[in-house]
Image (cartoon, rainbow, N blue to C red):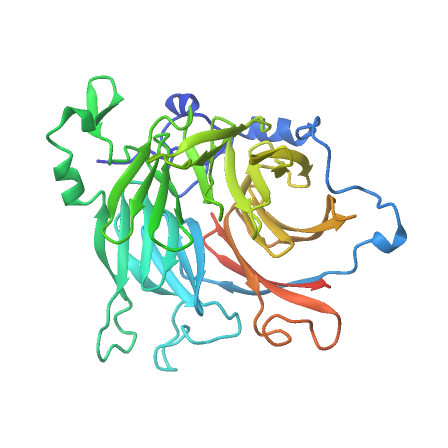
Length: 438
């Protein structure tokens, strides 16, 4: 049976019912909508955090150097997810492939088998039959979220004598929900939920595309979000589904992230961001806050390292910045917006004081957070990276370990180097080097 592709942004569940089916290799953007949005102010009621003129000359941002280091080839369909782990970069695409290559852009480790036969820059490590929407790498396992409503777990296999002629280094060890989980829920009516008129399914099932995954800090719990408007929590030791939060949103959930203090953030096509937490003494997560400032579908969420700042990207072309509420530790308030992209924000990643955003306008922007008087924050757009031919759907970022010894200041100038990895609908992975003044 063929699968119908829900648009990845800018359309609600109701809109999808009126649209013709779309190939899973393409995003759908209405040109009339895009052109009208481009001429309008993006959330004009929210102040900009990137002032045109800074108050003092010494506050002017120093020069940031950036360059495209390499383009990694190999994928033949849309890349939906990137993940860094160890010395490798993993990429997952809409044809069900996961490919791996060295995260070091100067490496030739995966480019040749024997020095004679050139290969694409990536090696296939997983080949599944279902489009992959999200990917997490943890130790010797891969967790993948799929368009066929399932989550799959892959584990490395030792193949003695393997000389790269067989690139399938991972095998599927579980498909969630597991057979045991499904069977144990079959015989009680209390375990069934209505998914549409006259049709029910046990609560451990996702019944639409699984759009996002997140792993708890200790690796013991896996969180999944879906276009079926639910998110679920799974125990990674035996892959049992422990909890399902139904009707978490009024439309598809596009993004889910976790903070170190146990708060779960979900972003949805219903324009809302919701905050969930398991309160003391409770067995299940409760809604503790709803953030409502976006005017269109929320596509991406990211947190800084201590969880004090939340970034959200949406089809309204703005990145909203949320900070902790001084009067309520379990709440966030919007402090401003980062503007510059001309189309929907599709992905976000944070590293140190840098925020990286990818957009349907085919560009990547690098923003730097600065704090004034230890209270008020403002941002500078350090770079606009333009090389992709199609929308940028996923990002990864890390300190450049080859620069100045473990990412420290460069020996010739007081700067720090980062590597940014971007990918999307053009099937290429771009690797950028960003040198930021200290």
